[in-house]
Length: 95
Image (tube, rainbow, N blue to C red; front, side):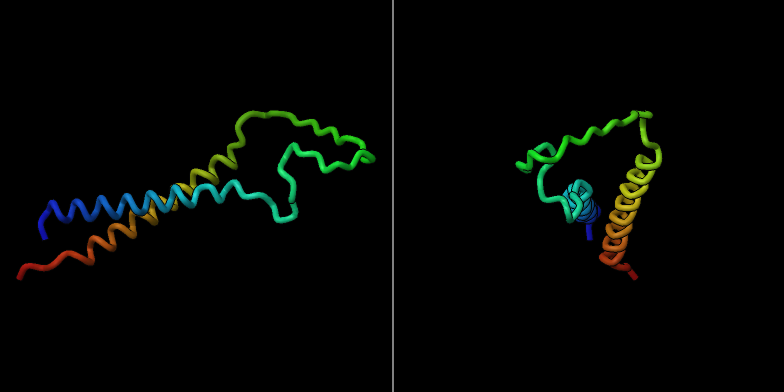
């Protein structure tokens, strides 16, 4: 197998792994099962008083950021490991 063919196959495998990662990312924006209405849409019930929610912004949530970065890193490492295993399986020995 030529070096150019090997490089193309490795690049193609890396592109597929990246595409799978990009497609899987929107699942992080899923909503809970019990929520049926989009946020901000009124249900038509005029008898319930409005709920006031106050939030305090304390800056960046480092725990969530670390969790997201760790998950993304794990996906990248697993993708690269898959590419490496696939590339290693196609190498022929010359003896």
